[in-house]
Image (cartoon, rainbow, N blue to C red; front, side, top):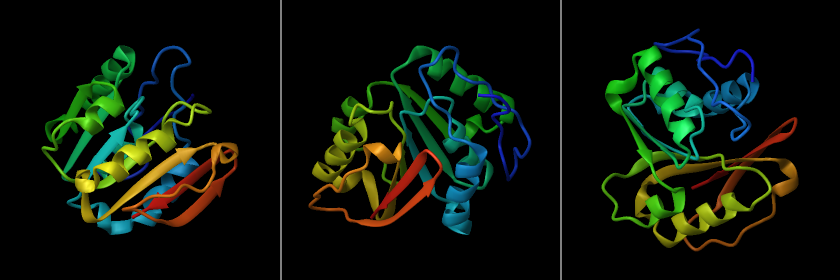
Length: 183
């Protein structure tokens, strides 16, 4: 993807590297800007979990806009190297952790931090979003009581899902990207 960048905040205008190859599908600026307009100033001081982080673009945007901490989870070595380079380049690395681990393994580990926002943007058409959401529903302690889970998928992947601890409260479509919000 061309011109991947930080849209606003401390690192505004910084260009980000893409992960080599075709293993990721970075969020477009249009969708990212819409997402952060929804968060508004609530992102300031928050903790952010970027599952299936890819380039780290969403978590980096959160840090740039004032999130206190971001954790990036990806089990692709090239993705983790790219996230590190992007964090170093934007000078947002002091309040970030990059963890090389499978997202589902991470979600099953003992919880050492609660997050205000959990962003899930897995590889498409594999129902991984559904599986990640089920894992979080089984262990809701990963998220603060008023936290949000946001799923980024292709609209064709969407189907209602029954959960015990979370409920869908919003859904926004931007071309071939659907954002689904749970709390």
